[in-house]
Length: 160
Image 1: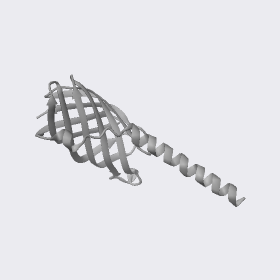
Image 2: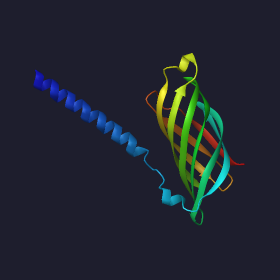
Image 3: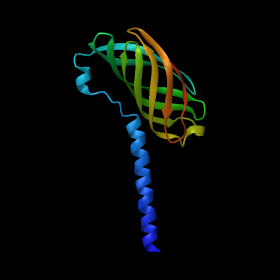
Image 4: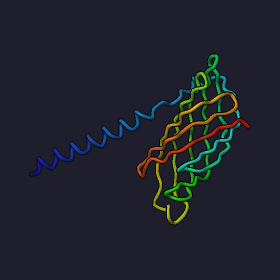
């Protein structure tokens, strides 16, 4: 009986590790510091619509290693109105690459509930942004992955 219990615990640990590793691999398109060599800082407005509603001012580091390609990386914090959990405090980072106006980015960070309805909601989040992005504006869709669901919607970025 004890041997069977140990095998079940080992199998459960391996399963959890495999799921966690897969989740991390799916959203591991992180930008290297070398990619941002010579980057300039720019202020953009990020607006989220859908299951997350918010408006942020983000200071992005922006590098353009070749024609029609640029890389953005920025951290920001503030409040998000989550359709399920109410108001959330956030500390987030958005990193992405635009090539021929096609944009893919990774969002990572932490959110925590600020109201009694969201008091138990706190943790790490990751997400994927896809769409189009030029030198001054962009739009597309987002999907956030965390332990409490997968909110999604639309995003817009405008250079200020």
